[in-house]
Length: 259
View 1 (tube, rainbow, N blue to C red):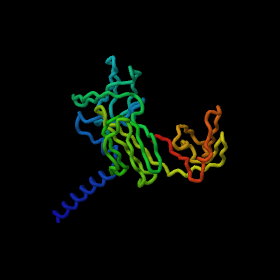
View 2 (tube, one colour):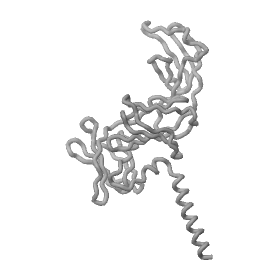
View 3 (tube, rainbow, N blue to C red):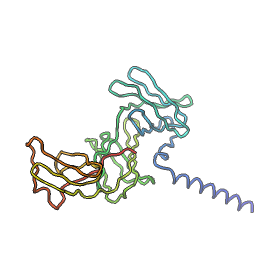
View 4 (cartoon, rainbow, N blue to C red):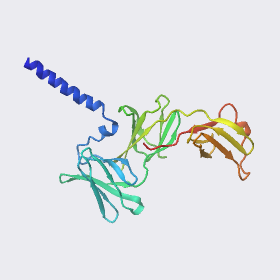
Protein backbone atom coordinates (compact mmCIF):
# COMPACT_ATOMS: atom_id res chain seq x y z
CA UNK A 1 0.00 0.00 0.00
CA UNK A 2 2.76 2.41 0.97
CA UNK A 3 4.76 1.45 -2.11
CA UNK A 4 1.76 2.13 -4.36
CA UNK A 5 1.23 5.52 -2.68
CA UNK A 6 4.89 6.48 -3.21
CA UNK A 7 4.70 5.50 -6.87
CA UNK A 8 1.53 7.56 -7.32
CA UNK A 9 3.15 10.61 -5.71
CA UNK A 10 6.25 10.21 -7.88
CA UNK A 11 4.21 9.89 -11.08
CA UNK A 12 2.16 12.97 -10.12
CA UNK A 13 5.33 14.98 -9.53
CA UNK A 14 6.80 13.92 -12.88
CA UNK A 15 3.57 14.81 -14.69
CA UNK A 16 3.48 18.22 -12.98
CA UNK A 17 7.04 18.97 -14.08
CA UNK A 18 6.33 17.77 -17.63
CA UNK A 19 3.17 19.88 -17.84
CA UNK A 20 5.09 22.95 -16.67
CA UNK A 21 7.77 22.41 -19.30
CA UNK A 22 5.44 22.04 -22.29
CA UNK A 23 3.47 25.12 -21.29
CA UNK A 24 6.47 27.47 -21.26
CA UNK A 25 6.76 29.96 -24.10
CA UNK A 26 10.00 30.21 -26.16
CA UNK A 27 11.27 33.17 -24.11
CA UNK A 28 10.84 31.26 -20.84
CA UNK A 29 12.53 28.16 -22.17
CA UNK A 30 15.46 30.14 -23.55
CA UNK A 31 15.74 32.08 -20.31
CA UNK A 32 16.71 29.02 -18.28
CA UNK A 33 20.35 30.03 -18.13
CA UNK A 34 22.59 28.39 -15.55
CA UNK A 35 26.00 29.78 -16.38
CA UNK A 36 27.36 33.29 -15.92
CA UNK A 37 29.01 32.95 -19.34
CA UNK A 38 25.76 32.18 -21.17
CA UNK A 39 24.68 34.89 -23.64
CA UNK A 40 22.38 37.59 -22.30
CA UNK A 41 19.06 37.52 -24.15
CA UNK A 42 18.06 40.89 -25.63
CA UNK A 43 14.35 41.39 -26.28
CA UNK A 44 14.55 45.15 -26.96
CA UNK A 45 17.78 46.87 -28.04
CA UNK A 46 16.43 50.42 -28.15
CA UNK A 47 16.12 52.53 -25.00
CA UNK A 48 15.40 51.09 -22.57
CA UNK A 49 17.39 47.92 -23.27
CA UNK A 50 15.33 44.94 -22.13
CA UNK A 51 16.18 41.29 -21.87
CA UNK A 52 16.70 38.17 -19.79
CA UNK A 53 19.81 37.26 -17.82
CA UNK A 54 20.49 35.13 -14.74
CA UNK A 55 17.84 35.63 -12.03
CA UNK A 56 18.86 38.40 -9.60
CA UNK A 57 22.04 39.17 -11.54
CA UNK A 58 23.38 42.71 -11.81
CA UNK A 59 23.23 43.94 -15.40
CA UNK A 60 25.88 46.56 -16.18
CA UNK A 61 26.18 48.89 -19.17
CA UNK A 62 29.57 50.52 -19.79
CA UNK A 63 30.09 53.41 -22.22
CA UNK A 64 33.28 54.26 -24.11
CA UNK A 65 34.45 56.52 -21.25
CA UNK A 66 34.09 53.75 -18.68
CA UNK A 67 30.94 55.18 -17.10
CA UNK A 68 28.51 52.51 -15.92
CA UNK A 69 24.77 52.14 -15.42
CA UNK A 70 23.29 49.07 -13.76
CA UNK A 71 20.14 47.35 -12.58
CA UNK A 72 19.18 44.05 -10.94
CA UNK A 73 17.29 41.40 -12.92
CA UNK A 74 14.15 40.06 -11.25
CA UNK A 75 13.73 36.49 -10.06
CA UNK A 76 12.87 35.35 -13.61
CA UNK A 77 15.94 37.08 -15.06
CA UNK A 78 14.04 39.91 -16.76
CA UNK A 79 15.61 43.37 -16.74
CA UNK A 80 15.11 46.83 -18.21
CA UNK A 81 17.86 49.44 -18.28
CA UNK A 82 18.08 52.78 -20.04
CA UNK A 83 21.41 53.36 -21.75
CA UNK A 84 23.04 56.80 -21.68
CA UNK A 85 23.74 58.68 -24.90
CA UNK A 86 26.99 57.17 -26.12
CA UNK A 87 29.61 57.46 -28.83
CA UNK A 88 28.32 55.72 -31.97
CA UNK A 89 25.28 54.60 -29.89
CA UNK A 90 27.27 51.59 -28.64
CA UNK A 91 27.75 50.28 -25.09
CA UNK A 92 29.13 47.13 -23.49
CA UNK A 93 26.79 44.90 -21.48
CA UNK A 94 27.57 42.11 -19.02
CA UNK A 95 26.12 40.41 -15.94
CA UNK A 96 27.52 39.77 -12.46
CA UNK A 97 26.27 37.35 -9.80
CA UNK A 98 27.74 35.92 -6.58
CA UNK A 99 31.15 37.43 -7.24
CA UNK A 100 31.33 36.09 -10.78
CA UNK A 101 31.39 38.29 -13.87
CA UNK A 102 30.23 37.31 -17.35
CA UNK A 103 31.89 38.41 -20.61
CA UNK A 104 31.29 41.90 -21.98
CA UNK A 105 29.47 42.17 -25.30
CA UNK A 106 28.95 45.27 -27.39
CA UNK A 107 25.39 46.32 -28.19
CA UNK A 108 24.34 49.11 -30.54
CA UNK A 109 21.22 50.99 -29.47
CA UNK A 110 18.40 50.63 -32.00
CA UNK A 111 16.22 47.98 -33.65
CA UNK A 112 18.42 44.98 -34.46
CA UNK A 113 15.66 42.78 -35.94
CA UNK A 114 13.12 44.26 -38.34
CA UNK A 115 10.42 42.80 -40.57
CA UNK A 116 11.29 43.65 -44.16
CA UNK A 117 8.32 41.94 -45.82
CA UNK A 118 5.33 39.95 -44.59
CA UNK A 119 2.97 38.51 -47.22
CA UNK A 120 0.65 35.48 -47.10
CA UNK A 121 3.55 33.31 -48.34
CA UNK A 122 6.78 35.09 -47.44
CA UNK A 123 8.33 36.41 -44.23
CA UNK A 124 11.61 38.33 -44.58
CA UNK A 125 13.64 39.61 -41.63
CA UNK A 126 16.37 42.23 -41.73
CA UNK A 127 18.97 41.75 -38.99
CA UNK A 128 22.69 41.04 -38.54
CA UNK A 129 24.62 39.73 -41.54
CA UNK A 130 25.98 36.16 -41.53
CA UNK A 131 24.44 35.40 -38.12
CA UNK A 132 22.96 32.18 -36.75
CA UNK A 133 19.16 32.39 -36.72
CA UNK A 134 16.28 30.21 -35.61
CA UNK A 135 12.54 30.87 -35.94
CA UNK A 136 10.07 29.11 -33.63
CA UNK A 137 6.33 29.10 -33.00
CA UNK A 138 4.76 29.78 -29.61
CA UNK A 139 4.74 26.01 -28.97
CA UNK A 140 8.52 25.86 -29.37
CA UNK A 141 8.39 24.11 -32.76
CA UNK A 142 11.31 25.12 -34.99
CA UNK A 143 10.07 26.41 -38.35
CA UNK A 144 13.45 27.30 -39.77
CA UNK A 145 17.10 27.72 -38.83
CA UNK A 146 20.32 28.61 -40.56
CA UNK A 147 22.34 31.75 -41.26
CA UNK A 148 21.32 35.19 -42.42
CA UNK A 149 22.72 36.41 -45.72
CA UNK A 150 25.51 38.90 -46.29
CA UNK A 151 22.69 41.32 -47.21
CA UNK A 152 21.36 41.07 -43.61
CA UNK A 153 18.19 39.26 -44.78
CA UNK A 154 16.57 35.95 -43.90
CA UNK A 155 13.56 34.55 -45.75
CA UNK A 156 10.97 32.08 -44.45
CA UNK A 157 8.18 30.42 -46.44
CA UNK A 158 5.00 30.82 -44.35
CA UNK A 159 2.53 29.45 -46.90
CA UNK A 160 1.38 26.75 -44.48
CA UNK A 161 1.61 28.80 -41.29
CA UNK A 162 -1.79 29.91 -40.01
CA UNK A 163 -2.61 33.56 -39.21
CA UNK A 164 -2.26 34.61 -35.55
CA UNK A 165 0.73 32.28 -35.10
CA UNK A 166 3.37 33.90 -32.90
CA UNK A 167 6.80 33.63 -34.49
CA UNK A 168 9.86 34.13 -32.30
CA UNK A 169 13.09 34.90 -34.14
CA UNK A 170 16.32 34.15 -32.27
CA UNK A 171 19.51 35.68 -33.68
CA UNK A 172 22.97 35.16 -32.18
CA UNK A 173 25.50 37.91 -32.78
CA UNK A 174 28.42 39.47 -30.92
CA UNK A 175 28.04 37.23 -27.87
CA UNK A 176 24.38 38.17 -27.38
CA UNK A 177 21.12 36.44 -28.26
CA UNK A 178 18.43 38.69 -29.75
CA UNK A 179 14.77 37.63 -29.52
CA UNK A 180 11.93 39.18 -31.48
CA UNK A 181 8.30 38.01 -31.49
CA UNK A 182 5.68 38.81 -34.10
CA UNK A 183 2.08 37.67 -34.56
CA UNK A 184 1.26 36.84 -38.17
CA UNK A 185 -1.69 38.97 -39.34
CA UNK A 186 -4.66 37.75 -41.30
CA UNK A 187 -4.14 37.22 -45.03
CA UNK A 188 -4.86 40.58 -46.68
CA UNK A 189 -7.62 40.81 -49.27
CA UNK A 190 -6.85 41.45 -52.92
CA UNK A 191 -6.31 45.04 -53.95
CA UNK A 192 -9.29 46.40 -55.91
CA UNK A 193 -8.60 49.11 -58.51
CA UNK A 194 -11.52 51.55 -58.65
CA UNK A 195 -10.17 54.12 -61.09
CA UNK A 196 -7.21 54.52 -63.45
CA UNK A 197 -6.14 57.35 -65.74
CA UNK A 198 -2.80 58.29 -67.21
CA UNK A 199 -1.96 60.31 -64.10
CA UNK A 200 -4.08 58.82 -61.33
CA UNK A 201 -5.00 55.50 -59.78
CA UNK A 202 -7.31 54.85 -56.83
CA UNK A 203 -8.35 51.65 -55.11
CA UNK A 204 -9.28 49.74 -51.96
CA UNK A 205 -6.96 47.46 -50.03
CA UNK A 206 -6.31 46.39 -46.45
CA UNK A 207 -6.64 49.22 -43.88
CA UNK A 208 -3.26 50.60 -42.78
CA UNK A 209 -1.33 48.21 -45.05
CA UNK A 210 1.53 49.38 -47.26
CA UNK A 211 0.56 49.10 -50.92
CA UNK A 212 2.58 49.55 -54.08
CA UNK A 213 2.87 48.74 -57.74
CA UNK A 214 4.57 45.46 -58.48
CA UNK A 215 8.19 45.79 -59.67
CA UNK A 216 8.15 49.48 -58.75
CA UNK A 217 9.73 51.36 -55.85
CA UNK A 218 6.79 53.58 -54.94
CA UNK A 219 4.91 52.49 -51.83
CA UNK A 220 2.27 54.29 -49.76
CA UNK A 221 0.20 53.60 -46.65
CA UNK A 222 -3.50 52.85 -47.11
CA UNK A 223 -5.96 55.00 -45.19
CA UNK A 224 -7.82 53.58 -42.20
CA UNK A 225 -10.72 52.57 -44.49
CA UNK A 226 -8.34 50.83 -46.91
CA UNK A 227 -8.59 53.47 -49.62
CA UNK A 228 -5.51 54.69 -51.46
CA UNK A 229 -4.75 57.12 -54.28
CA UNK A 230 -1.65 57.58 -56.46
CA UNK A 231 -1.24 60.82 -58.39
CA UNK A 232 1.63 61.82 -60.69
CA UNK A 233 2.42 65.45 -59.79
CA UNK A 234 5.36 66.37 -61.97
CA UNK A 235 4.36 64.68 -65.18
CA UNK A 236 7.66 62.80 -65.35
CA UNK A 237 6.01 59.57 -64.25
CA UNK A 238 3.07 58.09 -66.11
CA UNK A 239 0.90 55.18 -65.04
CA UNK A 240 0.73 52.43 -67.64
CA UNK A 241 -2.98 51.79 -67.83
CA UNK A 242 -2.44 48.41 -69.42
CA UNK A 243 -0.87 47.35 -66.12
CA UNK A 244 -4.13 47.72 -64.22
CA UNK A 245 -5.81 44.62 -65.54
CA UNK A 246 -8.01 42.02 -63.94
CA UNK A 247 -4.89 39.92 -63.39
CA UNK A 248 -4.22 41.93 -60.21
CA UNK A 249 -0.68 43.22 -60.58
CA UNK A 250 -1.14 45.18 -57.36
CA UNK A 251 0.40 43.73 -54.22
CA UNK A 252 -0.38 44.44 -50.58
CA UNK A 253 1.85 43.74 -47.62
CA UNK A 254 1.33 44.27 -43.91
CA UNK A 255 3.64 46.58 -42.05
CA UNK A 256 5.47 45.46 -38.95
CA UNK A 257 3.65 45.98 -35.68
CA UNK A 258 5.49 45.45 -32.40
CA UNK A 259 3.95 43.11 -29.98
